[in-house]
Length: 148
Image (tube, rainbow, N blue to C red; front, top):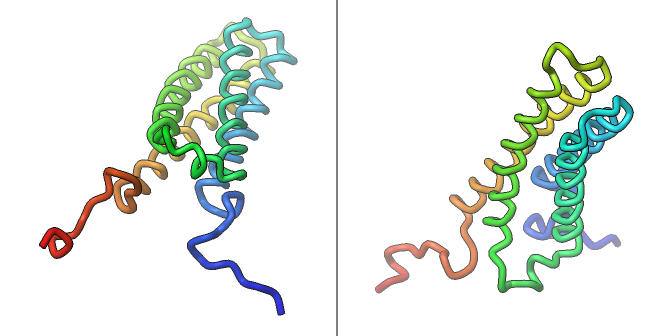
């Protein structure tokens, strides 16, 4: 008899948030690879490299459930800030990479960067909705009947 997991204890890799983060990582790695192959300007490579590193850090953090152990930081808020800032940077460098005087390989990197920017926005929205509808920690909303 195999033990079944409770729906609340679903592993990170099988959640929607996990799928979006892994897709975001794959798109960012692809974009960085195209930028490296096309010998794009260094800021394109550095920004996508930092983004890949940060996404990988958050994936490892959530997979090992370290966000539960390190409770002194409010991880969802840090994740939302990362998503917003990453979306801004990825869209900017992707639009610059799509300018007419770039090579085809750099333009492919720009297209994948734009897709990664869209995934950043989706990731931020997912985390924001989770915070809005299912808050946790000291900022948890209480029902009116709990105050009495």
